[in-house]
Amino acid sequence: MLLADDDHRVLKLKAPKMYAMFKLMDWEWCLLELIHDGLRELALLCQSFSHGTQPTVYHAFPVIDSMQQRWEHMAKDPKYRQTAPALKASLDNL
Image 1 (cartoon, rainbow, N blue to C red):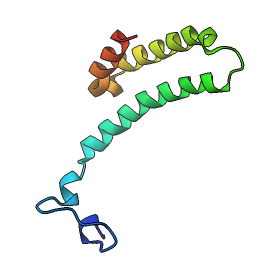
Image 2 (cartoon, helix red, strand yellow):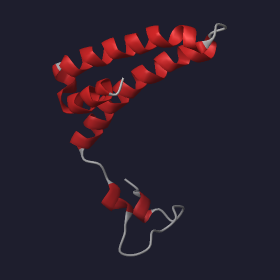
Image 3 (cartoon, one colour):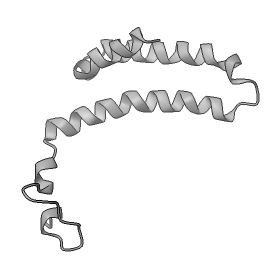
Image 4 (cartoon, rainbow, N blue to C red):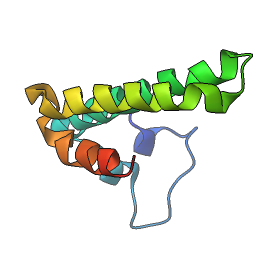
């Protein structure tokens, strides 16, 4: 397997840094996947603003309410236990 540190086509980092220093562990990839799920929910809801012909304020409260419900559900789901504090903090900001 060719890694970035060994590939001549990849710009070298200034010593002592190496690309291997930025390698993510398996558990970090899993956490990123959970974070991605939460942000995907927000992105999908925000897309509803770009497709509407009505003023966005007209749609804002139902979208925010839907986002709140989804994040509340995710915060209670054991699958998202690691991201629950961030989800709860986001809910506090709504």
